[in-house]
View 1 (tube, helix red, strand yellow):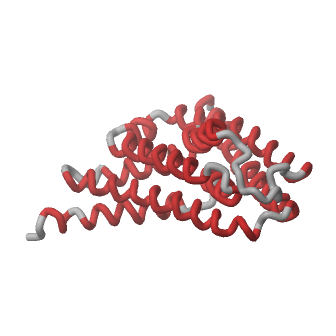
View 2 (cartoon, one colour; view 1 turned 120 degrees about the vertical axis):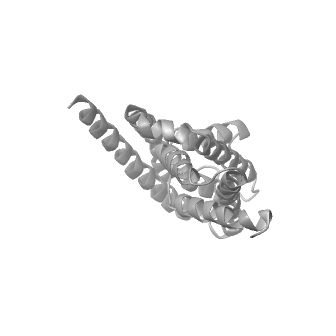
Length: 219
């Protein structure tokens, strides 16, 4: 018989690996955290808010909300429409910065040009208005957690939360280390174009999924 502590290792690493696999895909949340790291604009604060938001979504999912969302199909479509609207705004801002140039790039002093409050609100939006965050982090992680009970259930949740902590702080650190080589305006035009196109693509997917969902409900 394994000691109690040893019995928790397996669910912990299952939660860790599952959440790393879900979170590692390039999405709007990761794109924003990466962008803030590259610009060194409140990047540790952004990483903290993204991590704590994921903690909340994981805990909600592993404690029953994930199963509820999975049963209420129309709620998923509401997330899609809100996510599409939010991404439309940030797609516009990213592509406008690519066209006009970003005035905060290349000034050489490395100081943040965006307020901390605005960075926090944007991070919350990219997490809480992101259908993928809800469906992956809350629903899928919640669904996998039902196979565990007692202390193993909490070990699985702790593993999933550890993945968010490791991931967001790692990409923030990596991006901040790379930022000295990306201070040229031309480089940032390219970065903003890429980020804008990623957001536009995902936003269109959200909109399409929402419209198809409504059609399914009305059929």
